[in-house]
Length: 445
Image (cartoon, rainbow, N blue to C red; front, side, top):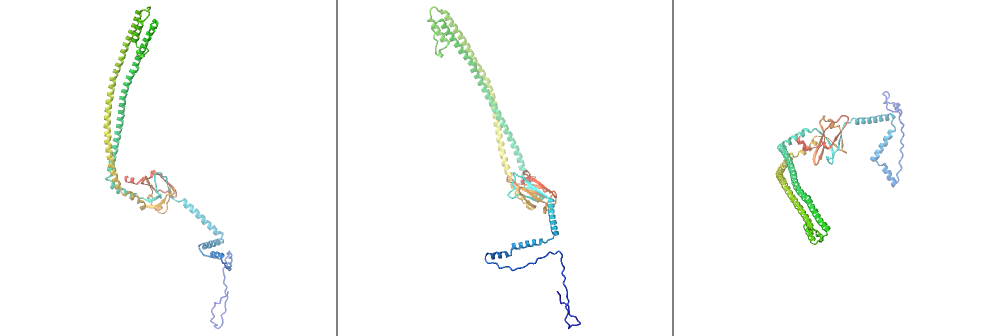
């Protein structure tokens, strides 16, 4: 297009200005993608009813519509990108992935794993990374040590005295047990002496006296049988007594004599009377000897009695001595038990004073984590991973501690571990029940 912008010439002001033609040159961009012209057509009027409402909803501008338009515009623009652009994008993505892998590989982590049975960690278990609090703990130990200084020596002395008293009580109980054993043994020996005496006397009367009785019965029966056989051979009218109590040699001899008075004249009376008298005399001799031997048994029984009495007296005397010893040791044991009860009562009072002197030591120790906290890491599935970064990485070497708080049998217990990360490695620490120490034990150090 031509433009008329030349000023009028000073030579001829009355003449009309001559227009000059100028051309606008537009640079032509090579490889420019062709743009398709957008043909805008009139939107037909929406039909009334449901279709009108749908058309209005479709053309309504909102967050979803904006995102949809942006996404469709981005996809439309990405379709025209060159391959070089996509190559650079791929290179950047690969670089980012490699960088992420390298960072993960070079990460420094301390992994804490707990395996506990007796310790309870509460509803929200956690691992605390604390700055070194040894000076604060030493200060608390020193302050509370001054309070406990007058009481703890008394407790230690009383505990030693109580240990010695219990040792004496154990020794006295052992003596009582030994004396009771000896006493029972002596009583057993005395009973054994008495039983031996009774057994000996019983054996004497049952065995030897029984033998004499059997001999007496056998000799008597033999006498009666010989008299009956003699009367039958001679042909006497002899009838022995049927009653066992009347079957005696003297009665049988009298019956034999009476039968001789009724004997036939052919029987020689002097010979028969002489025979029965001889037999009766032999019986009397046996009976005399038997009585002598029977009396000898009584003498033997009397001889056994003094020895038994002497043994019983000796054992009874020993039993009496042991009984006195037993009473003495039992009295000593009762006195020692009374002393032990007094010591335990006194120790209970001192321990109550000790607990009072300790005061809020546990609360003061419980305030240490908040004052020296560096990082708090929750325990998930009994494992906590502590990454060395931020404040943890900025801390000076050997100034951090790992602390886990718990309770054993209702008493507060902590585990304190040194924080020793190895650069660019994952270090694992395992915590067990034995690693926890009661907080009150720190005052004894």
